[in-house]
Image 1 (cartoon, one colour):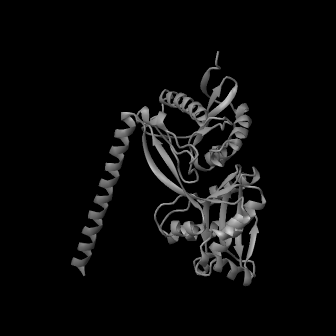
Image 2 (cartoon, rainbow, N blue to C red; image 1 turned 90 degrees about the vertical axis):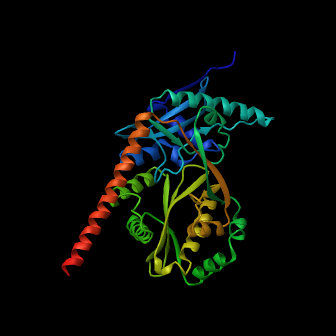
Image 3 (cartoon, rainbow, N blue to C red; image 1 turned 45 degrees about the vertical axis):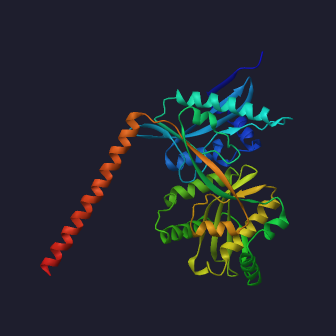
Length: 355
């Protein structure tokens, strides 16, 4: 008789088993590791649980669920610093590919049934590209949308440079000649300063408040799940920084920042190249550059020589309370925005009348 397939929330004393599983799964990532999610929860106020799929006593897959609570119910979804949050499945060494496909479909079907009964108001999952067969979700009423990310292989040192666009190679060489220095260290202040300037330049808020971001990075570094890399001028000043998540053969560049005065000089290209080299020497397989929406930053990512890989975002059916509550909140927010615009316009007209 075949072992039973079950899904259950893991107890904390089983997190080490889950972490080992994630590190060895083709679709795993630092985002699915309990140590990472504990740091994110401490910084952002959410919480997480791991729903594990077992085939008998053997882990066959699962998903780390980062939960947040709104007025309309508890929901699961990606967020800043949680780019992927989808199922992680076991790899199988089988003669026939359909056998692995069949096992994955059984695991995902069991997971969908479990999530449907878990009481969430809404669930949005985004697995890494290796988990591409999502038919059990679609068959059960989930919707799907497609996105992309650039992934650079770092296991071939010659290919790293050879696949880069020619002008970027020229900028890398220029920085080498002019004495730009590559460092890996815990200079959080330099990184955070450049991050805040970069986000201000694009009209967005920093990923986290300064104190929370500092504590988050410190905790990740202590767990061996992240490194900060910098490009420094000969005088030691940092002009570009990157935060890279580790913990799996595929690493993730989750945040890159640069001094605007040195962007045209190629400090960012230099830093990206040196990070790829460093990851190669550390034994990693690839670096996911995080997102490939159509914009100038994505064009730069494409020139770094990565492959464009598709991912699928999956959205569950939502509860009526969550759906209508969010819709009402959006309408109220839009109405307040319009009212504010009318008030500002009336004040402007009044000021003109007084002039």
